[in-house]
Amino acid sequence: MINRQRLTQVLEIEETLFKRLHPKSQIASELSFQSLVGGVPMPWMTRLPGAFPIHVRQAHGAMLSDIDDIEYIDFCLGDTGSMTGHGVNEINKAITAQLKIGSTTMLPTHDATWVGEELTRRFGLPKWQFAVSATDANRFALRIARHLTNRSKVLVHDWCYHGTVDETLVILDEQGKTISRPGAIGPQIDPALTTRVVPFNDLESLERQLAYRDVACMLIEPALTNIGIVLPDPDYLAGVRELTSKYGTLLIIDETHTICAGSGGCTKLWNLKPDIFVIGKSIGGGFPVAAYGLTEELATQLNKEIFDHDVDVSGIGGTLAGSALAMASIRATLSHCLLPEQFEKTVELATQWAGGVENSFKKFGLKWSVQQLGCRAEYWFCEPPKNGAQAAGASNPQLETFMHLWAINRGILLTPFHNMALMSPFHTTQDVDTHTQVFGAALDALIN
Ligand SMILES: Cc1ncc(COP(=O)(O)O)c(C=O)c1O
Image 1 (cartoon, protein in one colour):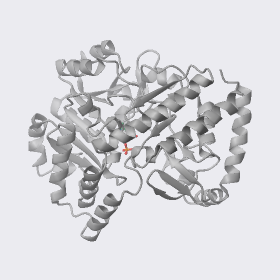
Image 2 (image 1 turned 30 degrees about the horizontal axis):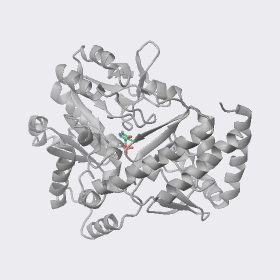
Image 3 (image 1 turned 90 degrees about the vertical axis):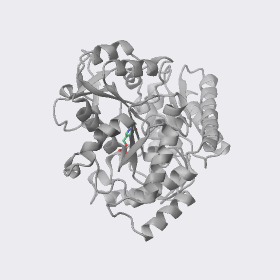
Image 4 (image 1 turned 180 degrees about the vertical axis):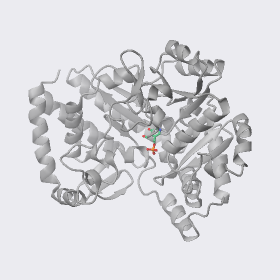
């Protein structure tokens, strides 16, 4: 559908325009190369296209501005870390107040109990613990599952992402063997020794792998979001629950991204029944926190370890996990943000965004597609994929780079991984219309 030569030409024009628009970011970037690996404090910050990263001056609500004084409608929202919108007043106030009276003491505060109760109300699991990142929460959940089941292996979906957790940075090769996923560096050991992998939406493969009865837990996103949005077939998640129970495998649901489905995530929306539940990113309103919940039964089984003298070297927990500041940030976030009435607005905005993109596809006769999960939506240069391998196979790096760069050059930021937009309550229908117009113009430049 897309003429490659034309694509290369328009991409070059956008790359030149990007440099012309961002002289200050270019200088800042050259300077930061002197002290930072890759010129950035965290490697993913190089993922947006453009010759160098734009340097941010400030972010507020749904907007972000850079040091060249360019404003952007921010549909990336720190890849979900700022799903509440940037700089929410109530969260700022709560964090500032807590900073004044002590940020961390390695002792509990009242806020922790409030947060535990609220997480139960939203997600159903009765007992909670905390971590500094979703990666850590997933690591702890895997460790607990192996410990309590006395089984060695974990099971994940092909092309999943659950943070920098060694056992989960895997895919299936063409022979159906577990291997490290492309790009994963320094695996501790051959991941085939730790991990079984099944395609998303494939209950037959799942049963075959569980039947070895060596799988402690299956760690899933209820819909894949990290290789693009891949939605579950109607009976898939019920089948996962049934099979994991049948083979004595614990089911861990990681809703770090799928909280976009609603205030109780997919777990509430689809009445899922995980044994362990994990969530990070958004619940701290931009502050680094994560939580994991356990059933009453698992929590009771863990009691011995929790009260053991050696709990500090158990491999779960961490010095700053559950700190007073972390608890204050979650309490403020869950009191004022990610609420049902806000989702009503943000889901509507995502539907409008998806509709705008679909209309452009129709106008240009493209058989491309849009997927939506709650307040997150994304376009594909193909039919909607059914599993991670299909999604990975559909990637079109040059076209993606062009679409992102075109948008950046016209004041719109998408999530750098895939073609994804996330809505906050601060976004407006006008912001979405701007995206629709800019998106249509990109296709026009490519095709006409
Ligand atoms: C589903 C899921 N789980 C866990 C993580 C890890 O989060 P963090 O990088 O904050 O540790 C991510 C990150 O994108 C994620 O998407």
